Length: 125
Image (tube, rainbow, N blue to C red; front, side, top):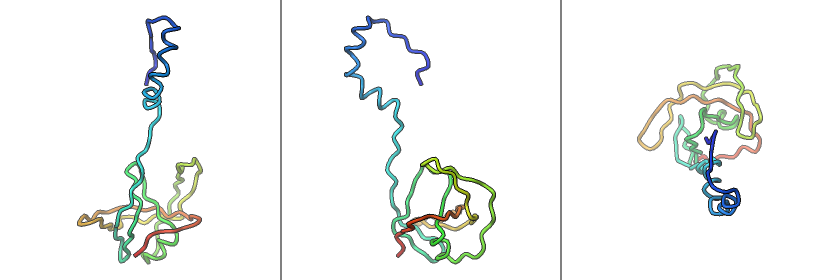
């Protein structure tokens, strides 16, 4: 952001000002993500009470257990790899394309990539 910054004040005065601007500088340098919200959505015949909504996500992932409960049949093979937020790299077991997802009155198409996840828990009604 600040590739070239010039300050035309004595060094001692600049050092004295640092505590006043510490919070301001930290907010400029740290990109905080908003908390993920839980919403109710319906996929096929299953309604999920607290589906995680992350507006910063570029793809939709689904666990093996949720995929099996949806009973959508075979999934499309995929050769892609995904880097997760913790920097680990995983390969999806497959993809579900053009799945109808209902959120409130809105219905839209979404693609889901199935991952083999540990400790799978979800709010299914």
